[in-house]
Amino acid sequence: MNEFVKTLNIEENFFEVTESCEIEYLIQCYAPCTLSGQYLIPAGTRFCLHGLMRGDAFYMHIIEDENTESLIKAMMDKEKNNYPKLAKEKRLAGFSFFITEEQLQTLPLKFLSGSKERSLEILMLIRKKR
Image (cartoon, rainbow, N blue to C red; front, side):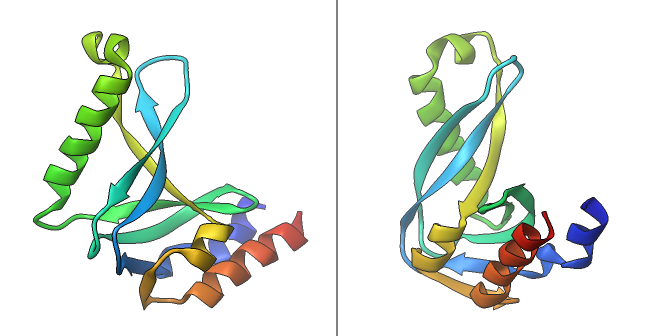
């Protein structure tokens, strides 16, 4: 299955958020737990799909620019407030962004490479293969 997924070239699909919108993420911790959150991502932020999260979602990387560092710092500050014990123990490590099939269809996205349609087609092909 992994070889099949690689042939679909998921990473050729990247986009820009055209309006500020909530994006979900998993919180990476130096701990045996999984946390999640969401943040109002500003318009102009760019992401690249990079792998399958589950049958209806992709992981994605943020494409770094001059605003990325302050955005990640603000997100980290938010989660430190939400999880003070983990913050105190310095166990918050970062974020794994993801986007669901529904969000691909509804969020204000402008594809710079690939397309919304191709991204949705990839999810369909993977589900058929399973």
